[in-house]
Amino acid sequence: MIDITAGLVLVGLLSIFCQYFAYRIKLPAILPLLIVGIIVGPATGIINADQIFGDLLFPVVSLSVAIILFEGALTLRFEDLRGHGSMVRNLCTSGAILTWCLVAVITHLVLDMSWEMAFLFGAIVTVTGPTVIVPMLRTVRPSNKLANILRWEGIIIDPIGALLAVLVYEYIISTQDALSHTLWAFSLTVIIGLGVGAIMGYLLGLALRRNIIPHYLRNTAVLTLMLGAFAGSNMIAHESGLLTVTIMGMWLANMRDVDVDDILEFKETLSVLLISGLFILLASRIQLDSLLHVGWGAIIVLLAIMFIVRPISVMVSSLKTGLNWREQAFLSWVAPRGIVAAAVSALFSLKLEALDYAQIEILVPLVFLVIISTVVVQSLTAVHVAQWLGIRAPKPNGYLIFGGGAFCRMFAKELMDNDINVCVADTNWDAIRSARMENIPTYFGNPMSEHASRTLDLSLFGRVLVMSPYRQLNPMVTFHFEDELGKGTVLGLSNNEQQQRPSHQISESYAKKLGLFDDGITYGKLASWVAKGAKIKTTRLTESFSMDDYLQEYEGNVLVLCAFDSHNKLRMLTNKKSVDPKAGWRIMSLVIPKETDSELVTKSNEEK
Image (cartoon, rainbow, N blue to C red; front, side, top):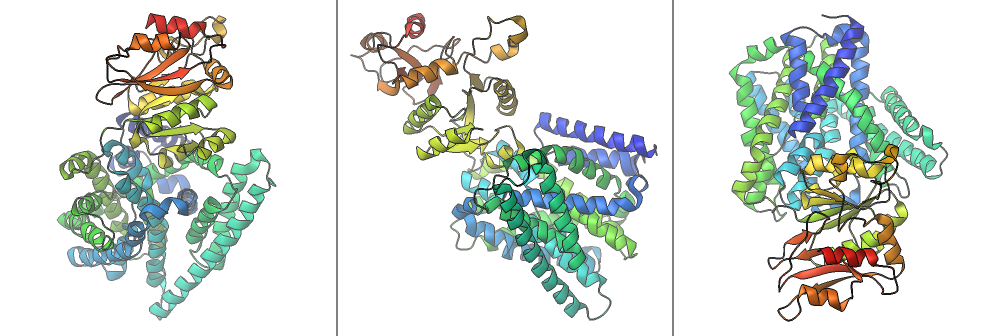
């Protein structure tokens, strides 16, 4: 065991390493975090969470769970649930209760665990995790319907599972007349949680809407007020704080004219420092001897959860929803447990350890066994299962366009008219509002943010076009999505900085990714042409109307943007990639008024 200061620093360093490693191998970060936690904890004894934090361990875990649930609730917009609400509703109500009861019965019978502990374990493993599911869905690429069901189930069921755990805990600690005590405690928890959460959510939303809180204090104020509501609610009704922060987050997310995107971005940094470290610390407390003592019974419980409980829950939840057997089978297979299951199990384990409750020592190891097994097995097999079932979406042909200027909107609209999926992302609200008025799918905010990673369905997009005026942000977006989607998937406009003084020149690696449409085609040049009346047109070539005829007709006042070949495959033009269109191809070009200075366009087309 190392000293406390070195231990804290080591936890921080290991959490960053695990996050980066998971980012590189395209797996949920929870897996390396748990493995590293076990290595530095029970395996080697390098880190002892109880010795580092002492009496502060329980408050730290408790506050961390509150932050996790609040952040998840901030992403829950009711309007996003309308298309697939019935299945999500069933999974999070009847499905959750069925999972809870079945897991409890199986655990009691197989492990000879007390009914109280079995129901507590069942409540904890009802939850799935959006932070685990979202990276998996990007790789699997199931249908949009299935992806939305899994994503929103993970968000909604987190507080429900936590509330079920609270219900069981209240029953366990009651010393007399347990049933009436539990019903009273549960009713009080729900009333206080709903009431305090709604009131605090409304008041905080009002303060944000009226800009009462200075911008530089917004993130800190929201975080501290949320934690204050959590603590205050717990003081009124024991363990009502979890429901309070969930309702508070949902209220803010759905309150009109309240922008929570910057708050969600702040959470990204907080999660790396706090949540990742928490995972390592929780894993370091696992008592492997307790799990080994349980033996094969734990494996039987795990297999029952994956192959019996989840399929039954999905089958019952899907009644009268129209899902076919293939879709039900995929939903039955994909249900990885995540951070909320780990944190809630540790939270109630700490509480019951203080009461010297029997069998509590196997609760956390059993939960972590379910987490690790479901994440590993389902991450490695989900793609093959989706292919076998035939529900995997085709390779994405869509384009994510970073930049919402007039040309970008015009280009996006023309692509949509040619059956290409498009989404325009921009941090400028006026640009996004204009795009929405033209019925163009949009994302308002930074497309690299964690909020975007949860809400922006990248399974629809195989390419990213960087066409914004933000010279500082463009390179970061370029490298982010090239790493996310693969080499050669991101193209950007030229910025004419190659001839500037050395201090302003761009890197060679970044320069290779520029040249969309052609050399010298910049955001400013396109904006100028559009302002002067340039329009985008798509024209089909024929045997009697060749590419030469096409260029001659417009007398060089045209910039060829892309082409659709005879198989309807879109070919984007760049300074390094030209095309030789044939009869039957469709050419999409920006047609420029003749009075406009289009010397550059004429020169580019002659070279092509």
